[in-house]
Length: 225
Length: 348
Ligand SMILES: [Zn+2]
Image (cartoon, rainbow over all chains, first blue to last red; front, side, top):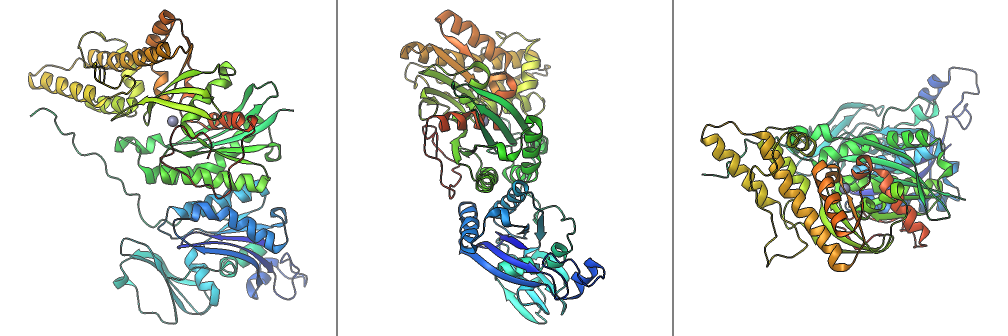
């Protein structure tokens, strides 16, 4: 299955075409050809995730401008059309940029018009899935804070995602991914078993981790003395 | 064959998706007009909170689009072009609509038109009253804008004759409503309270109407302060504030200035048609006074129905239809939202 991978939760604008196939013993749609339970089989062995094409630009102010052009360039480089896509996977943050919403709404609108599912992926999970194993993933949250999460040897998230000052982040036990961006392969790998099993995707809800900055008006000031 | 144009609006607190059919004879027909509003989430803050608006747009965008297609009984593959508000408006809010529009245009492989929100408020009138005579004059009044515009071509030639130097008219309504303990947004409750009041009870000042003031600019901060002063002195004297009279007198001051300047601009330029649009156009005193003064001056008055006056996607679809029909070059897919888009830029 060909998948469009998007992420705008870090300073990078990422769009990639990824080929996802089930582990040996399943067909390309992940359907178990050996006769055992599909979802269990897909979960048990490693799916095959390969990058076909990608466009990445590091510019936190250009998410809105560049994402759709990047999608079309990646599609062209892959020698396919948007209609060939079987699913969209979108990084839902956490991310501090207004551009995070550009990625989410782009993924949602593409999936809607193409009639394919859109899977959310925590951006920190996608970064961890790039190389797998015990990891601490830290990304920029602006306002002198970071987002972070920890992962075990199987790649499962064990703590987080959190937002807070750097001083509150634990010592890394394994790999430290510090201010990295997710690759298209990592984005898809983090949710590959769900996609292969055809599970109903959750909503594309951003991981804001912070409440909106808004204050109720104070008592009105008098204009007369 | 009619062309189907989809319009997306997200410049402030309404997520709007509209569908129109642009016919060969130049008429534009409304097929769907779906709006999701976050106005209630902003009420306790007394004004639109940009981050809350942006979050609401993201949640509402695809569901609102689905509703529009359901209402029109169309499928996405029927769409011939996508139009979207490129500005002016709130940056984070615009970004959501512009990003969605690009994705829809790319997936459907149709042209994208990034258009001006203010021109959309004028274009929407063609859905109700047919093609616009040109030139015409447009008075846009809402919580975000107060402008007097000369329209020589809705698809490309719009000139600003004047605008507010401080608050938008709708903002003044919100602030006066707060003074009178009326709910947000202030337009409808003030209009309602004013019905039982005397518009001549209190002579509130008419801003920017002196001999040396710019003839077509507006100012509403003076009248707002005058209302505050008046209310405070009444309270200081231990009197009960006559809400109906204050509301009626304030509303009279605002409607008087808006209509006087609009009619004067039309008369001076020899323009025979005035379009009044934007959320405040629904105000009963403004429309009554505009009707009276336009009739006296021999000017044709066009006011779209209230639903079309407030922010919506149909107005953007309508403008997109006119821009496409004029044969203008579509926008590039790296189009960026422009929060300060000037009114004379109809298409980005
Ligand atoms: Zn508006």
